[in-house]
Amino acid sequence: MKILIVGQGIAGSVLAHLLSGRGCDVHLADAGMPGSSSRFAAGIINPVTGKRFVKSWNFDLFFPVAIQVYRDMEALAGLSLLRQYPVVRLLAAPAEANDWSARCAQSDYSDHVRELHDAREWAPLLKPGFHFGEISRAARVDFPLLLQAARKRWNDEGRFSIQNIEAERADEWLDEFDRVIFTEGFRGQFNELFPTDLWRVAKGEALIIRIPEFQGRRFNSMLKKTAIIAPLDDDTFWVGGTYQWHFPDFAPSLSEKDFLIGHLNEMLDVPYEIVDHVAGVRPTVKDRRPLIGESPVKKNVFIFNGMGTKGALLAPYWATHLVNHLLDGTPVDPEVSVSRK
Ligand SMILES: Cc1cc2nc3c(=O)[nH]c(=O)nc-3n(C[C@H](O)[C@H](O)[C@H](O)COP(=O)(O)OP(=O)(O)OC[C@H]3O[C@@H](n4cnc5c(N)ncnc54)[C@H](O)[C@@H]3O)c2cc1C
Image (cartoon, rainbow, N blue to C red; front, side):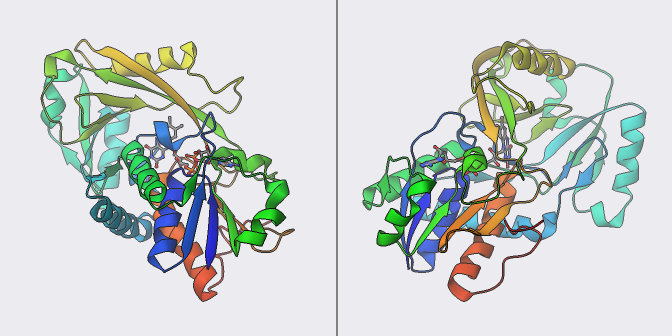
């Protein structure tokens, strides 16, 4: 089957890898459009999120698939793309600490959370007064490196083009390809071959910082209070993220920078330097479920989108689901179907 994938973010990259693994003749196009989200995301997979420490939707089902797919992509690229390391969770006493203890006592959370007596490697950097927990089965996918490796692969094989594929001209592409799959990120909300009223996209911003006092030290966990600090592989840390549902442009903003600095200062008691400030738009959907399936108005044109705030965890499982639908005829799960009401 000859397939054109439109968009090479994490969704398009993972989908292309899986389709090609099943023997499809895959081609990708990406126009490098502003506001795209994978390039600036930390790629964190965190099983327990939110103020009430709730396990992510179907985490135990999605996580092993994600690990398997990213390990396969790593082996193919010969690069280290996935790091499995825990999150040290800072807890304000006593309310958060009590809620955390209650979660730790639940049998269905015992593989994911536990209480800690100290902040481990983060202890010398922190303001006093916190309690601590640990979230295990967390990971981080190096999105920029994965995108770069995927781009190189498809480019070297002559299967990648820098090109804006307009949905209105789908018929022209269908002369050449058996299927066209749109993985356009938040721009999917403007694609009129699919319902456009399901979206509620969210701009997000992050800081990249350096902590001079701890330069050269390798951190083996992430740190989270309201913001999350994820050590990167080059002596810097990713700090994010923010949420804006109304925004005038795609550029990083002063207000969100101040917001992140406020949350950093709530945690850290050491000087840091801001080396970058980035922004992207998450492809979030009102009911927070992916959008998958064939266009209701154009046969053989599909969407694979709506990864929202959790592309790293969701893309491998749901790309596998779409591949099985396309190649084996298994039905699209109604919960993620683009035709859901
Ligand atoms: C600040 C921030 C932090 C985040 N942190 C995390 C995190 O820690 N963990 C996590 O799992 N998720 C995180 N996310 C969410 C994550 O970024 C998304 O879930 C995911 O990256 C979405 O990927 P995508 O491929 O669907 O879209 P995108 O990454 O936006 O990719 C879409 C691509 O399609 C291209 N394109 C669009 N339309 C066309 C067209 N018509 N023709 C050609 N090309 C086109 C664009 O150029 C772009 O490259 C974060 C997001 C932000 C903004």
